[in-house]
Amino acid sequence: MPLVTNELLDSLQSDDQLRRCDPHDMMGLVLRFPDQCRQASAIGERFGEGARFGEVRQVVLTGLGGSAIGGDFARCLMEEFGSAPLIVNRDYTLPKWVGPHTLVVAASYSGNTEETLNAYQQARDLGAQRAAITSGGQLRGLAEEDGVPLAIVPGGQPPRSATGFMFFPLMHLLMHAGLLNRRLSEQIDETIVLAEQMAGRLGPAIPLERNEAKRLAAALHGKLPVIYGSQGYRGAVAMRWKGQFNENAKQAAFANVLPEQNHIEALAWVLAQKQAQNWAVVLLRDPAELTETPRIARRVEITKELVGKETEVHEVWAEGSSFLAKMFSLIYFADFMTVYVAILNGVCPTDMATLDYLKAELAKLK
Image 1: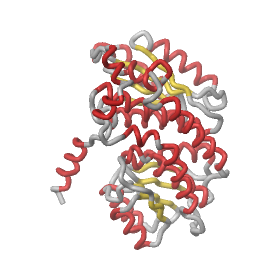
Image 2: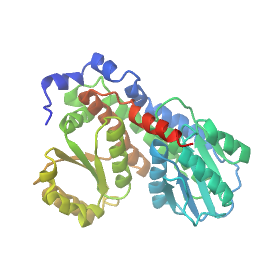
Image 3: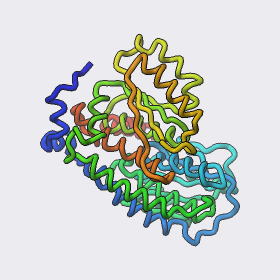
């Protein structure tokens, strides 16, 4: 197991080490995230405004990777405040039930994701209502050709760092379409203010002893993280944490949500230490009783007791008072923390060479 030496811990305090490991400035993108959310919300206010939608019985957000994660968070929002179900489609093809009463939103940050382009064209063939979120590319061209609602967001950064751009326009579109039962302007304002506060206390200038994200990164260095959401939206956020470990820190991670974890995965810990020695569990929590019910809170305590016999357990609590602010507080914490893990791992958080190779090989099939 890699030791977290004083030299490694010092690397989290070193501007030189940050520049060496982060030459493309992922940390800068993380620090600017509150401004991104503000800009994305302004774009969203114009997205679909005045558009005439027919009856919408279901919504499909079709996208992949960082372009689709905004759909996962919108699904949580729709489950809390919406009038129609929303699913996230991560495939070339759409469900067979898609038709004129379905709103299909194609989300591709680059505009050139082949699966999303194929799904968009299928939505057109099926007569579905359509919209698109992109920075350009082929998707922009298709949406402009069809005259459907289109949100054009700034390009030029990795999709996983563009979560605000891929979420807030979608949220506004759902409001414009009458699918969200309340205006969320106060929640948006609280979310942005809270993100600004978090940037002030989790950024690289804040020393380890006062920086929760750095401390958790140090605790998880060299470990195989397993992230459990306590319930509801924390499950979607747990998947986001997994993705940020994979893409930023270049390491494996696993995710699940309660109560499902208690029904299947709890049994895996009986022999987990025979499979690997360096597990670490992170529980994503919400302090509100109405959000994390007493029965779920008790499940969390029992899970901590059982899992704690086999490995270390950490807890990260949502902040803020509104649904949106609490969800994004957990999302934003992981952005900082996984960049710090990347620094400890000595890897570039922006590097995507493996995925670039995969895409190049697939391109040979055309």
